[in-house]
Length: 609
Ligand code: G6P
Image 1 (cartoon, rainbow, N blue to C red):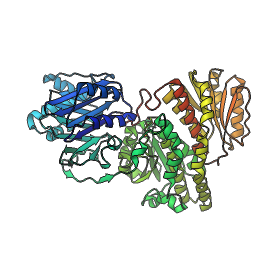
Image 2: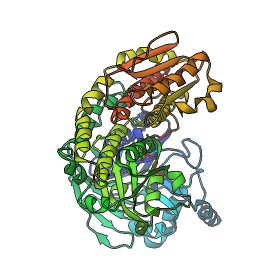
Image 3: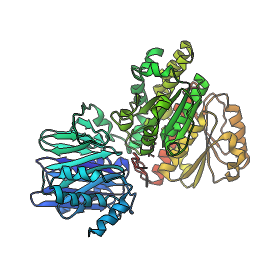
Image 4: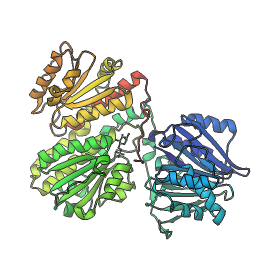
């Protein structure tokens, strides 16, 4: 979703901005633009389509400047087009970029139009730049102008503004949308996330909600929502740089699939030495809070929601703790009953997903024994606003379709099950045996990923198909859901997941030779039942593609294609079985020639509702 990069320096910043935008491409966008100030004034270049097109246009127009803002836009108000791309201007000296949605833009637009302002775009954003222009007429100070304007805005925003009359200054603010400040040497920056700025700095300040920042060559001054100057901690990040490069791989998604053993290893490291260390991984206050937990409410979106669905099976079966899971966009707008002793758990790769964040912010803390965030991004809003945090250590995930974030979330959730279970009387012996399984996990994931070649072969059968059905039973049902989500996200093949037992209640009507059916069949107590369900598919001429435990004795035959996985302990099977499904959708997408890392219409970080 929209990305912002801004810089104030003594050198030409156009490369910093374009490189930053490229590093934000993963968020999803449809157009891009940049505004630069140099001694001649303000220049703007915008293009529909990829950042590479913008880069070429910047080269051709020789646009340069020592101060600048840049943006990738993901259309919300107004279709993707050059005229709707950011930065937006008011007059010839003022430029602004925005991530988020201004909910009251209609009334503001009418007000500005009645005063003679003319609008050049269909966006909600353009009202803000004109408001700043109007305020500048009164204060002649960019910071104070923006300060007065945000009081009029309803909705979510991260904004960056520059003005040719104050050429060495950039003013930015965040409320509901992410923004970080990067600190350089005699130059400073802002961006939607730190990845954009890693080539120029590793020192970052994560802004708080409502913070406004005055960025100049000399430094950065931060003011909270009440206008008081505040000190925010400076974070130095190490080692994240290489992770964000594609290296030898053709796509980020492919790289991220193969990184899973290492990502899981990092997530487990120093946290699974003993049953006690598992609880400690959730923070100092974890034990006191976990003691009070009687039930768990999980809220998340997309792939993270599927991780929550898996956790529900685990929590109830292994720890005897009732668990509800809901997508955040539903949960936040629904009246719900909160049973006594409920732990509120959010799961998110980015920690900035608008609906998940809103659900957290809507919780009345007195109703919950605590709020835990399972998240991959340190310093993100979700992390900062939750009492308990478990950081998954997947490293930067660039592919829009989530892979290593999911399997590290599952790893974290299994640890949560043990930490809560222990307080409910789960025996240390049982915990030790799950810990032993977890220790084998990176190796088993590697074995599953080594099926890459046969899966690539198998994927050819899907290329011409329009629909695919995914089946699983029990805890493998959410794994099937995740498999279907992956396939539809990146290959644009319509895919549905069903619990195999539901087959005859509807989806069986769709099964014929043109509808491939993918099933995950670990060697668990539901295997025999699953096998019967699969017979129902074969009887209707459906082609079956099975990912099965090598000891499950599922036989190849006409219309039955079997790929054997290593023998996997039952509890961790959902994590291992995710991997072949990721590889399947990856290869189908590559064969279909889609944009694997940035699928159409989708965004990695959905920071608007
Ligand atoms: C978007 C992404 C998905 C992700 C979901 C939730 O839809 O494309 O990959 O699962 O948002 O994101 P989160 O960062 O909260 O996990």
